[in-house]
Length: 451
Image (cartoon, rainbow, N blue to C red; front, side, top):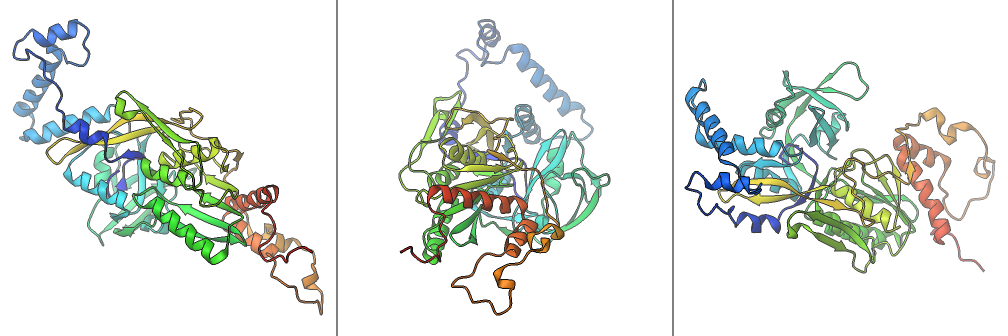
């Protein structure tokens, strides 16, 4: 991820493998000064050591650029470009990070950064919006997941220069930028003027959907997300009593830190595997398990997902689904099942390298396939004239001189308003209420005790 427009979705390890790997330089061949050593190694089948011909090809290209390129090029620039090229050829999520980009990454995971508030990724040689961050200028301007950035300040985004386009998204706080954006299924792009700002991303927000039923929104997985969730749910239950169920909204959550995702999943599980990772190095083979302590004390859960639910968010989704802790509702998730590790290069720069795949508790890799919800919802909206309140029908409250009730009931208008604002959330609440009845927690909190 990079500041302002983060280049990829991440399941990210910041520490651990990176420090150990960076501290150990690659071993040199025992007779590297002789012309025959690399060639002999290659002929003996050691693919880890480049052949003499491969080394000569690289140095020849380097010399040709130094001698013949139209303007002089610094050695450091060439070498950094070579590293970037090596990583870019591997997968969309491995990349070189200079010291400034590494600092930006630290800001991203801390939850405070300067920019437009968008997550972007390269897809089909296009610069695509994965998700606009809650509270950012892009989301306020109406930018949507799946939008394609066609141009930046009038300069077209070239398929072979996506990294350069991403860098043009950066700029100082208060500076202006205009994105030319093509919405999904639109015929013509539109121009969206934006102003870069300091963005404080609150990764967890909560409120009550109905008596006893909570809404929990996790927008991304930062260093403090699990602790934020614990505090938010403690506060909610102090104010409203024990919860009868909760909707966990992971829609358009682009991911973040693996350890943070593990912490959030653990908050809702008492036991079982959360996620495992497997790579080529022994340090990459890890299994994370839940510890006792469910913040909801077993109350039913529905998890809302969509095609912008990615990486670390898919770890949480998979853990809750495979452990039969929650019902998943929405659209198929993004399908990023790889883990990146930050490895320092010793000079202030680093590489973000894909080091492992992650697997859900059932041993399933969601790479490319994503997670299919238990209940699949289309991209549905509800018009005001389709709400129950406008459909007609009388109730006791509509009769003249009716007796007052002992507690307020949720009205058709309440349900209709939620359906208009967020149809998927409205459906999630309906499902959750049914689950609560089956679970034995369906009685309204204000209902008098039975005699």
